[in-house]
Image 1: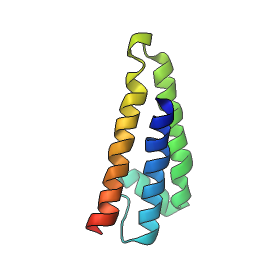
Image 2: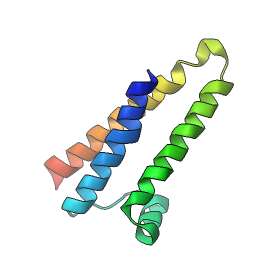
Image 3: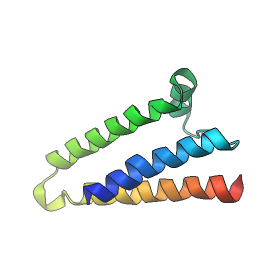
Length: 94
């Protein structure tokens, strides 16, 4: 399950965000992330996302065993939504 979570949340979201910001008129919608991109460039998204995944894995480890699976499932769902949203904005809207 973690592989799917990392693929959608880590790779899918970052790749689509970077691609559409570079190739279209798209901009980052989150103000803190947009400010970080303005200061450090698009590649700041990679360590930012790695940090988020490490945090989520730590949360997973601290969660009671019977509830743990919810963390990678939730991360996978969030990553899927974000990736699909980016694709929608990049292809359909822009």
